Length: 320
Image (cartoon, rainbow, N blue to C red):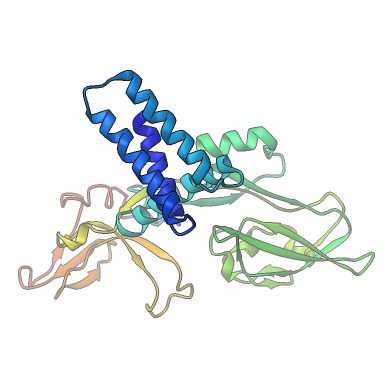
C-alpha cells in the first residue's frame, strides 16, 4: 500500500508541478521522500503508518483534485494501451486478412458467393456467433417498396476503421431516392451498374434481378450473399531488415506505384518466385520456369521443390 501510494503521489505531483506553489510542491516532495525512507528502514509499522497518514493529508491539502478521476484514469490506461498496440502494429507485427483465394490451398483467403433463394440468412445472435466462431458473415438487402437500383457508390471509410458502401435506389411510387448502406465486398470499388447486366467485377456481380433493369417489388431480395473470411496472418515488418528474402517466401507488399493495378491502397499477399537477375516464364503445363546463371537452360519448378509442395499439387491437365 505504501509503495503504491508513493507511486501515485509522485505521478500526480509530476503532472501538477506547474499548477502548485513552491511551498505545496516542496511539502509533497518531502512527504513522499519521508515515506520512502521509512519503507527502506527497519520497518517500524507505527512510523510507516504515520508516514502514510502524513502523505495522504499533504495530498488532500495541496494537490488539485481532478473531475471524475475514475473516468480520467480509465481513459489514460486505454490511450496507453492503444499507443502500445499501434506501435507494435507499425514497427513489428501487423495482423492481416487474405483478400483473395489466389493462394489456395496454401492460404485460404476471403471468398464471397450468392446464396440460393431457399437458403436461410442468420440474424441477431446467431449471425454474431457464426461470424466470431467461423468467420462467416452475410449481406442481405431487401426491397421495402417498388424500388429500382440506380447507383452503387464507391466504398468510404467511417470512423477511420469501418468501410461502408451505399446502394442508391429510386422509389418508383414517390420518385424519391432511398439509400441503404452495406459492408463493402471484395473489388466493390470497381462496381459499375449497367442496366441488364453486371458491367464489371465487384458488388454488381452479386446484385440480383439484373435482367429486369434492377427493379424490385416489396420484399424482393436485392443482395443475398455469404462472405467467408478465410485465414489471417501476423505479418512481420522487420524480418527482412536482417535476413534476405528467399525464393518461395510468402511476402506482403504495397501496390502503390505499381502500374496496372487500379486500387493503389491494397496490400498483396503473394509467394516470391523471382530473384534478382532471374528470367521467369510459365510453361504450357502452368509450371514456373526459372532461368539464371545457375540454371542457364531453365529449371522447371514443381512439387519436389520446397516450399512449392502444395503449389503444384493440382492436376496440370485440368483447367484451373
